[in-house]
Amino acid sequence: MGQLNEMYCYVDESGNTGANLFDPAQPVLYYGLVTSKTNLDVTAEPLLRAARAKLGVERLHANALGVGRLSEIAQSLGRFALKRDVRFSLFKVVKPDHAVITFFDQVFDAGLNDAVPWHHYWTPLRYVLVFKVAYLFDEDTAKLAWAARQETNPAKAAEALRAICATLHGRLNRLPDPRSRELISGALTWAAANPFEISYGAGNKDSALQISPNLVGFQQVLQYTAIQARKQSRQVRQITVDRQTQFNRAQGELAEFYRRIRGHKQSMGPGMPEMDMTSMPKVPPVFRPGDDSAGLELVDVVLWVAKRHAEGKPISAELAEMFNAFAKRGVTDEVSLRGLERRWSFLLDLPEPEGPLPEYLAARIEKWEEDRRRAVESC
Image (tube, rainbow, N blue to C red; front, side):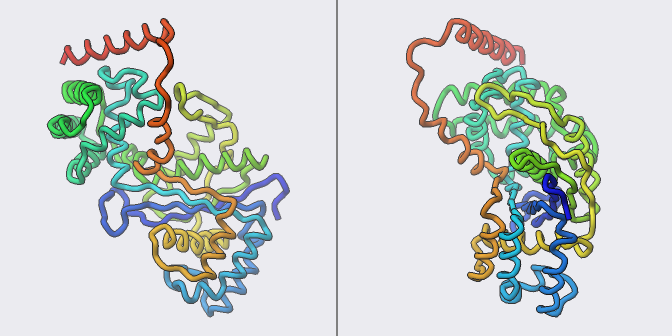
């Protein structure tokens, strides 16, 4: 049994297609996170042993059991979640959107691209710009952008980036406002002229893994684990992750990086979220087979139901009730253009500033604009 100030975490994923972001059968990567005050490998084992016996199986594999058979044990699982305060959270990465977002984050980074003014990347204005850029993409261009992002040969990545920038530049007339066309035109022009400054390719296979949807989703899991630990005044005792060979090493490296910067806080820019690493877990993730952990067995079941629910597939009333018991105190978040729109659409409703800007701010913005024009003219 865990102490009152401890938290145990169990992580599984579904919809993994590796570096293939454009599989129409699996457009979304899902991560399920179950958190508990106790070690579920101990406290949930009697519950799951009884459930296995009832169904006549050695382990609970949701995909094999299906809606009908899982419904037979749903009530007991839901009651356990409510009694033990076991929480389920769902994190999604919409893979085609990820290809576009990673293009924007690399090419329009004001620290890399001299033709992007500071305030159009390090303030919420970046989210206005990302939607304008995304509007220029179609699926074929997004596929090319992702392939180039995965390229380990710098010369090939640079050449591909030039071609993608030219394609997007040719579509600028699709944008109705002149200022957006001006900003994006300048940024694309500068990136095409200075592709090695942008460093668009992955560099090596390890770097390619770090920008995969799997690692972006796992990053969400770690960050929310820290948030929940802080809110509950708990210390993460163990993070158990379903074992799979392709990404476990990279997941471990990401967790170690976060552990090293534990306690660090940093502003991401005016109006932007703060990066808060104060409660980041100290413990490394433990990678175990799903058949060797009651906690992983439980998250497999809940994640399977959550995915069906998210995709609009039918579930029984019993499974819906069970899912609500686990999810009522968890969260859902996603990396997607729709997720960004939901989070930042309020920007469109903000009132116009009253009166002129403060002199120091107006002067700074004018300086950024002069630097931007000079960078574009130098191409």
